[in-house]
Image (tube, rainbow, N blue to C red; front, side):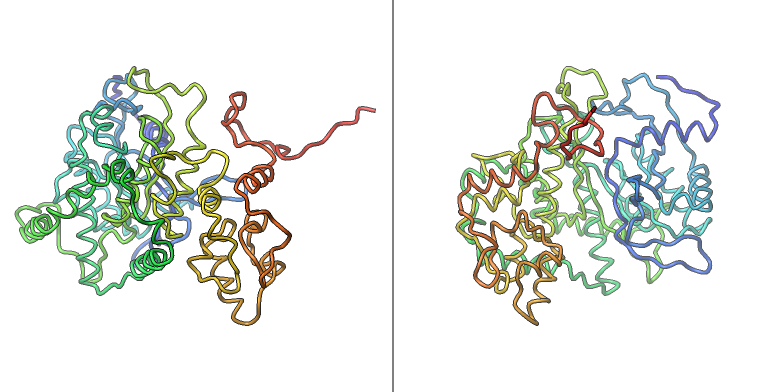
Length: 506
């Protein structure tokens, strides 16, 4: 370990911003907060953490670590204690100075703050709390703040930080407790899930106090009930599924039996000023606790869990902890360790992509993990996206008539998204739709054409055969995805990747 005592803030920024690149859990803020006369900055739901410019650059986020010092020795982490790297740490004042000066220059609109563990979880989070409190109260910063929470942090500190951050997140790190014990022995599943439960319960209390009605919960329940009614057999778990999804039981252990006792424990802690002092103070009547919700991150490919196992964990997190997002990070081998897998062919980016596609289906399309995967088919198809793959295995439900199908059935058609399904529902109130109308609405007909009819007719005669449609869908892609063929490696996209031409030298 190399520690430099005299280090400029610019040098610290270089080190700690580079060290933060391995943390992928950042996205749009998900919270709207208008600017105030007495404050600087605001927080809008679109593109606060991530904003993409026309040339693909990601902008608008100051993404840094508070420190890259760490007392833990996680096998997969570049900043682990056994690595001989340059260490640096910000002070709370430096965090404030950087954030405000970057904001005044219009470089950023928000702050993403993660950290290693210096001295202890509580010591590090105390310093982070001081930085966030100073930003909000001393500098009157009203912009978006996403704060990473360190497992094992005192309950009172988590409670206090939640009043200053827009979003909080605790990394699950690995899908199972056994994998965590193997690669991150200093961390425990209980220390990760307990603050997740605390944030969830505190947010619920705060919503009840403010009278905030969450319509998204109603839509989730309605969607699940609608799909259950029309696809009962598909949603019934098999015995094999029950055996495989033991990880859901791990996640819900603190959810059912100890939920009431934990709620009582949290209430007592918040009622005791001696327990919460000197961190917590009663918020104003209009304050919201972690208004943008919480998220987590899992490393994919460092251990041997199947896609079924990973998606089952994600589904349990969404159902039981009310998470906004689960992020999937393809494993990159930055350390030499016998316990880590080889990544000679690069990180599993295609697998990460499929997991994100399936995650979208869970959150917005009403799918369940056991519909997309099974014990006999535990991993996603590398050639087709999860939605197309599901449709091909359930051709008995197709084709559907777009002028009659309900919203939830339309969502299950490949090529029809959430917005497209809404447009169809609205447009067909005035007149019956045909394929020209669908094309104008943005439906991807090259995929949807195999699964829909308009006015009782398909666009052209299609044989409803799994092999035939699979060949057509794969042929439509014109080439295999990166990483499928052994001779294909991960590379920068070329402007002419999808163009076949010959150069005439004459």
